[in-house]
Length: 569
View 1: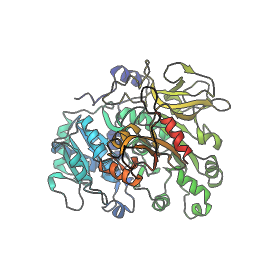
View 2 (view 1 turned 90 degrees about the vertical axis):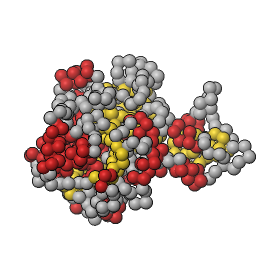
View 3 (view 1 turned 30 degrees about the vertical axis):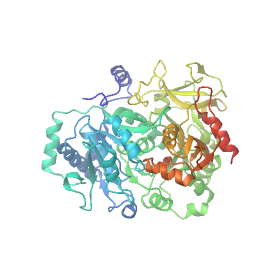
View 4 (view 1 turned 90 degrees about the horizontal axis):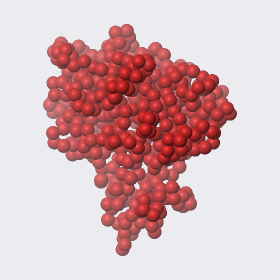
């Protein structure tokens, strides 16, 4: 068993188990329970436009079929040499095959490391170097993007690239299939393996990727217990119950989708409806046609819907109870419209792959002005609310760079987080700067205590330079390095600038090399794409400067860059 298979130290496991926050449930074990008690209920469904958007006819699997498909795929992976502790990279859009893959890997103790479909060779190669994966699972192509070909070029020759194939175009040794009928040979293969392997709720279920509070993208291992802990806070915020129908528009690769949907649908006995890529018309049609009870909607679409009662009235959303949102500031007027005109509660989520979990719901923030920008100080004594999140999570505010606690309102400080939702640490680093001396996670977010009475936090900034583009965390230094390789550039650095819909976008600030003309934004982005950078990381503005602002030791001062970008409109 490798060191990645269990990342939680023994004393932490013992303490959180004794306190009742962690237990012996696994995610594939919960799927087996749903197979037993809800076999005929819809488990997962593809978007109706899958054929046109992603290829392949839409799948609709009940819990019996989902469980059987996961068992069959698990047996096929065993036959291909995957087993306990092996890492499997996965790059798939939101399709039923991705859900099956998570559970199949889980059944045999393999670790899933999911990547956005936007990731290119640059990101894939970096991730593979950190994880030494056994294999990668993907599709032959997604529209014009040749996913399998890109993966093969990025990965070492010994890493297999397997593809879900429904058209018969993939060589059989590289092909994977969804099989929903029981297969005696495969079931026996899996049963024989399980005689020698016992799954544990503290085994690592996944390694997701984030820019965290420092540096380039980092791996975040999370066990079954870590996922289930945060899944329970998400379930509480959404008031989820058995038979609910959940619509997921976010890629199943990080916290928003995994905690909000993958974990909660199997934990609560719900149906999971998939959506990808985001298409407002299709999404709204799914909300109506699938009788959705809970979903998470980007702030921009919520604003559009709140402004157009006519658009809202075109659809029958009578089954819908709650809508989550986050990743960018919410508008109080929008929440007021949904609360008081449409009769649908908006939940403001603040979370991260590392395990931050604060939810501003009508129960803890009835006032739209409060719910739009403030989050409850869950876990603190004398708060006027109760529940799983309040009992489970711990947080406090300290002066930046210290462990000196701030208790007075209106004073910005770094938010620290602890409890059963918080990860054990990033892969491949000492994590000394990530946790305090007593084990609290440094989120890198600047907050201040606020409210009347002061029962809330307001996010006021970040301690580090990480750019948050629509919930996708992007390391600016990673892009800096690539830009500086451009022949026409002497110096380069990127920084964030505000965007109403995504929260932040990226501006490239460059100094032209002597005797050269600065490149255009279009040619700059073409250069970055040639380096394999993912499209969502491309700059959307360009600022040409005579020099970059630096401190006495030569470090670029991004806050001054941001001021210059602001001054240039």
